[in-house]
Amino acid sequence: MLAAIRSWRSQLRAIIDTQLFQLRGPERGTLELVQRRIFILPTGYGLLFVLTLLLMLTGAINYTLALGFVLTFLLTALGVLSILHTFRNLAQLRLTAGKVEPVFAGGSAHFTFRVDNPGGLDRYAIGMVRDKRALPAWCDVAARASSTLQVAIPAERRGRLRPGRLTAFTRYPLGLCHAWSYVDLDVTCIVYPHPEPAGAPLPPPTPVRGDGANAGDGRDDFAGLRAYHPGDSPRHVAWKAAARGQGLLTKVFAGNANAELWLNWDDLPPALGIEARLSRLARWVLDADTAGLAYGLRLPRRTLDPLSGRAQRERALEALALFEP
Image (tube, rainbow, N blue to C red):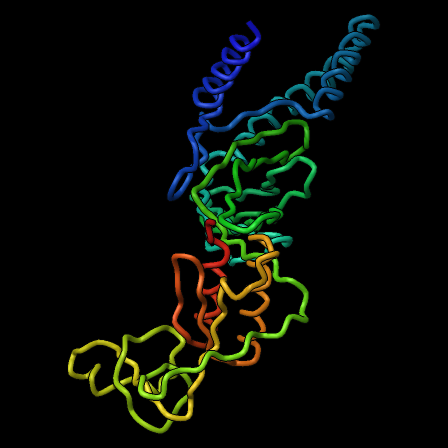
């Protein structure tokens, strides 16, 4: 019986979410706040305002005060107009998710949303929040212009972080009514593993056979060409091959560089857990990048060739963030 009640409640909630609140999962592209997406209710001040009007009307009736009737009806008309203006302040706005920069676990992901106002009226005090206990982000949008809202969401675990269901709302102009709409756009943020504190030394370089070409820092002998990777030095790009229509290729040298720095999953102590290993590898990636070293990354089922630069740093950290044991 209890299971049946829970099933009925979940089905009822799903119907309310999809039919009433128009919640059908993350949506791609631009979200327009049309009329059926906007809901409005009186705030606490609005309820107090209504109670005050009732008391004023009661006093005017009891004492037959003409000016009391005039003031009561005037304030009532003002309250009704505030409902219209609050609703219109949110209606027809268009929301588009922007690019989100990756963050480390334990920080906050800043999701940016562009707010477009195609109408001829300025919009004021547009807010957006996910958790009612958090501070909302605010913006004003001029007529036929755009603005941005940046919502900070805690990034507690590595992986892909979705903002989930956000609430766009306004109480403009008098604060008597609260108009809101639910926003769930298809956008994610990459959350890197939290790097362990500095202190663990980088692993020693791995010797490379003298008869093989490597992508280290050797400068003596030309060893061949390989596909271009973002972050390669422009001095090593084979521009003549690119001019012949062969695409971007990078020259590989062999000679002085007889060792490669590999950040290897299997070289870590077996006592370390999965998340602890990822944290140490993240620390090594940051240390190697700070030192300007070329390094490779070996994970179960994935290997990144030795390179240096910001692109390599981002690739390595993303591989650690999305690692699945």
